[in-house]
Image (tube, rainbow, N blue to C red):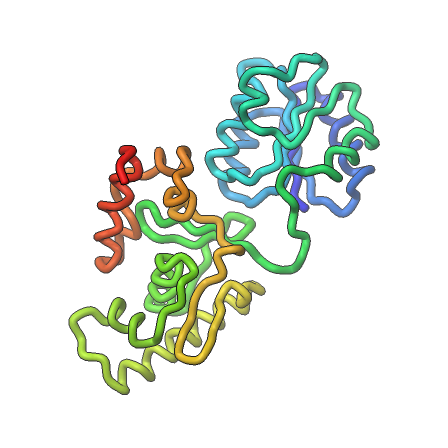
Amino acid sequence: MKILAIDDEKLALEALVSAIRQSCPEAEIRSFRKSDELIRYAEKHHCDIAFLDIKMNGITGVEIAERLKKHNPHLNIIFVTGYDDYTGNAMELHASGYIMKPVTAEKVAQELNDLRYPVNDSDHVTLNVKCFGNFEVYLPDGDILRFERAKAKEVFAYLVYRQGASSTIKEIAARIFENEEYDLRHQMYLQKIISSMMKTLKQINAEHIITKAYNSISVNIEFIECDYYRAVNQDSHALSAYTGEFMAQYSWAEYMNGYLYRLANGKK
């Protein structure tokens, strides 16, 4: 479990972190006194929960939450406040919970036991996939996943593009070997590419993301955070992030731009 915590008052932050650590000693906790540092960290690393002080100098916890939610819609937000007014924008963000100061381990434990979005503490890795602009795959720590072969990355991109639907080897070949006749040579080469892709995923304990059956393969979207998936589900933050490019390095993905453009402009 990865937890963020912010309060611009040193003693208050120390008390918050101490309470979190007492209630959840196995958690990885990152604490901040400056909002820009927390936001930069959250944009590069997957996190499960954020404890945000509502009243800070120059920015509110609600404003921080809005920024964090754009990057991770399923982040559990727990507001920490010395005031009893939780109304307005804070309520609209569908926060997981609220804690009144002084913060105690008991209060923290109560909120952790009733999270809006359950935290998966298994060994299964969830990848953050960016499809707007160039296609990139990010590890939970924010690093880019490096594939051994460019074509292995392209096959993974096509499977993501398919949104969990199965594809045959021939269908994949038609995309990544455009304008080339499919034959035994292409079939054998594609099998090597898929093996390379699986090797890369296995190295990061993420082979569960791929589902294979006889002559078909797909991605398990349960373990993928993706701007494209959020956009097709009409998430307003994801749609606002679309600027006209989708998997820009792959020509076979071009026609999806028309569909995304219509969604982003309120048309179906």
